[in-house]
Image 1: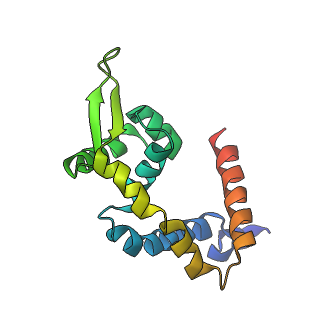
Image 2 (image 1 turned 90 degrees about the horizontal axis):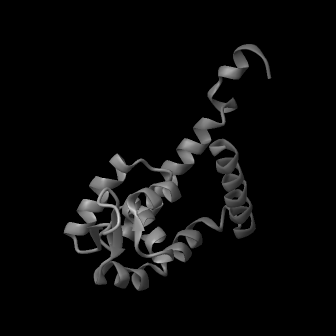
Length: 146
């Protein structure tokens, strides 16, 4: 590919990644609305369900988000009673995030979300391809973050 063809939208890597991300997020929206959470809040919960009691920085590293993006999300989640935020006793600069009872209980309600999402896609995009795509995207993320 040379010259002006390099600037055609169909020849870009960024656009299909961007558009697919937006469309997948849109598919999650009605499933998450039933739980009363947003997609970014769901991502935070996924991290905390895996490892409860993490610092804001640790959550940010896992989600590739900056603290200034996470803090307002976490504050809203705290107001909803989903998480608790406390200052670390050993270092007051560190904020520790822990699931509240409501956040812990949401895990049971969220168990069906991945399957419901995949059921809507697998007719046109088989499960094996979904797994390969996820693996390829994870490899791309790893390469880009180095």
